[in-house]
Length: 270
Image (tube, rainbow, N blue to C red; front, side):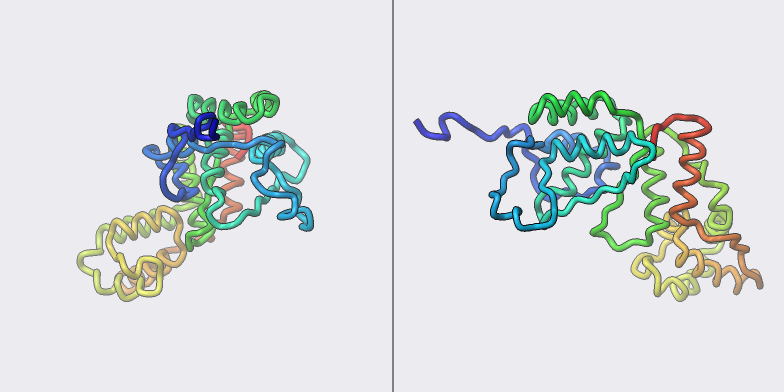
């Protein structure tokens, strides 16, 4: 009798290639990614004691980690910050997509799939998690990408709202000056293309100066792009677009909590 006669790899759980955390918002990928993550239980870590016993970190299996995260997200007074440390290629992004699908609840069927995968590793942990699950607005950021935090939080928040069938118009009160810049760009890009290229040379759009790219960046409150467009506006109009204030990640999160957790009570947490 050989091991290969007893055990075999479940090919249904195979997902080829690396995973990006922000694929949580990709409707064509998220189901396959979340479904294919294989959780492991407290009795199995996949590392020997010598690999971690001399460190200052506590070793957690992924099922227990999921349970702790869900419980911490349900508490009201504790510090809900949680950090996971693991080496390159160990599945952090893959786990992130699975956990985001579990916490969000935007797709109840997918949530149950992830919950069943956790229960397959440890039935008790699966039941504990099931008891504490709520509907949350989950904002996932891919830390491997270079981005402006404020703009990226806004972009992810819009995608998160879209998952739940909600409009991003809620952000209009924060982005008035950006909408004015979008309107100006659409109407003047063709006649002032060289000036746009000049002022956008030192921004994230340096290699893609198009009305579509500018509109998307302004829609996500990209301050550098706004400043560049504002310079073109000054040359054309003789004055600047009045910018009341920058849109910060704190502004975005505070607004979401107020609108959707307190006033409308659609979500338990952000």
